[in-house]
Image (tube, rainbow, N blue to C red; front, side, top):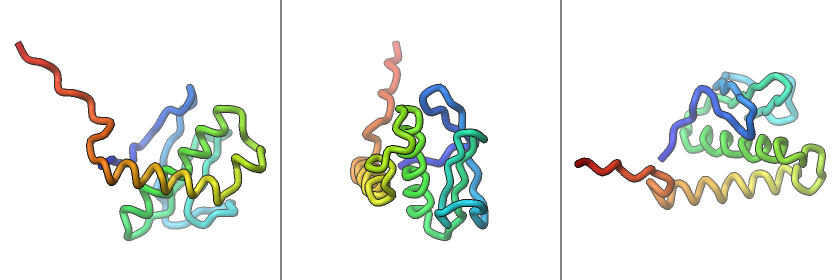
Length: 107
């Protein structure tokens, strides 16, 4: 399906991604986005699906931040962000290869 990269670029901003045993200084115990540090932390979990879904949750936050919606109570509602991340995860897992690049033609 997809792998969590070590770094991701969102709207011109580079984020380092770290999978850590515990998330510190966050309201969320499973993930944290820090645009000012260029860091996304994900809690290490036995479930690969859980970590990937948390990654997508933080990506939704990052996209909103880059779009200027940071602080908007509707867009930043955790229930909304979770629903969007869950929908994206379902799209990716239910349609493997949906965003795969076509193989180059050989001559």
